[in-house]
Amino acid sequence: MPYCLSVLFLAAILFLPAILVSTIRAQGPAETSEPLRIGPGVQGPQVKEKVSPKYSEEARANRVQGTVMIQMVVNEQGHSTDLQVIGPLGFGLDEEALAAVARWKFKPGSKDGVPRPVLVTVQVNFSLQGMQFDWKAERVRSQYNSAFLRISQKGTPPDVLEKEVQTMRQLSRDGFGPAIYREGVWLINGEHGPQDAAAGLRLIQQAAAKRYSAALFDVALRKMDGRGLDQDTAAGMKMMHEAAAVGNRQAQYYLGGVYEKGERMPSQLDQAKRYYRLCASQGAEACRYRLGRILFDAPQRRERDLLEAIAFLQLAAEQRFREAERFMETEAPKLTPSQSQWVEQLKQQLKGR
Image (tube, rainbow, N blue to C red; front, top):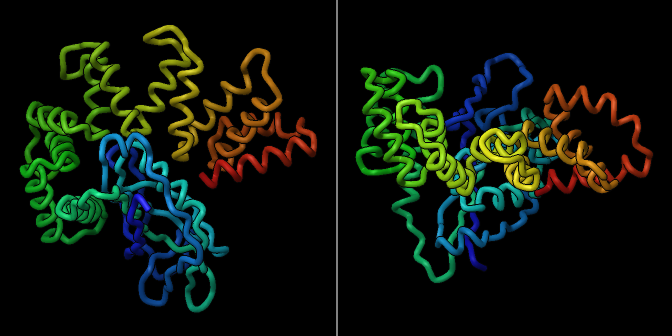
């Protein structure tokens, strides 16, 4: 097999992505609607059936190896929900890992013997045949993820926080792209030390030169807007495409909007659909909604396009995307029973990618 696959359930802890920030409150003594975390009295889920990921051609061509880390909730039925890549590799490997893990089956986790939703983290390792796996690089990534988690988590003791901040700065000095970017953001915002926007921007540009996706997206926007950098729309758009190619959802959504609206170039709906599909495949509800609307509003729309559009719009509505919810209140009742069945089947296929 062209990869090595391993799964490690980690004690579920808060993770904040570099761009999209979300918060999971710590589990208190009282019962809440939040998923439980593995710990005293909480039994973690157990894998019953695994689906192996494919190796993307882009990753193979670029000889990319490493680990994709996915955080998700395993519900009472043993199904994975709310999947999110918290340690990405890009080059198509994140999508392949998500598609595989989304189809795994579990024995549900439990509390006091009762099945309950449990927050878990899994790791999917990719390694090409004939290539030595770079465990040193993986240790660096693990150091970064551990430090970032503790720094971002509310209530981290001051001494632990200071230690992890120093770890992050050392990783930055060692040339690790994500750490360079994170230190740059701190300097711009005046976090964990004095503010120095110019120095912070230089670090973000260094991280972009290492093709770290969040930094590529950040610098691309700054170049196009002339914010802190000389305005250069062409260079900014080129960098935005690079960010999208290495899996940055914000860049994919941005380019979808650019091609859909024709803001910086003539409208190209095929290209818009391409980029919306990329971020829709990662579960971005706004991308699912925009893709659905383009398919739905297309002139001379085929039935297959209509039903695909409804499937994406329903997925966005299920994620509580308000525009999609309002749209489906009007359109869902118009479907025939057979159309509704087809849409439901398509939704399940999309969810299982």
